[in-house]
Image (cartoon, rainbow, N blue to C red; front, side, top):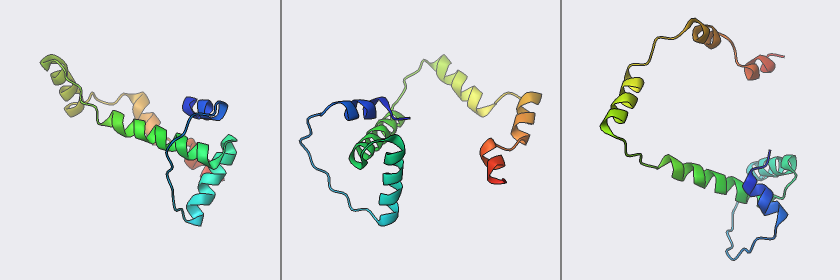
Length: 105
């Protein structure tokens, strides 16, 4: 499903003032073209959307959260001393993911 940004890019002719040139091998180009076709967009729109979403993801991962000491202690405790797994969790972890089950077909 296309992202909100991709939908906006596809709907309107946004002012573009900067060129970015890319050199791709045929495997990468074919993969990108297939993904763009699956979404019904151009290669350019797909690349812009993908780069935009990845840039947002990277920048959000760099965020620093300032917490009160009590909140920081609670997070540290949860990460270093996780609760015991429940029987439901143990059962879930013993099952194969659907994607692996489909590979066996």
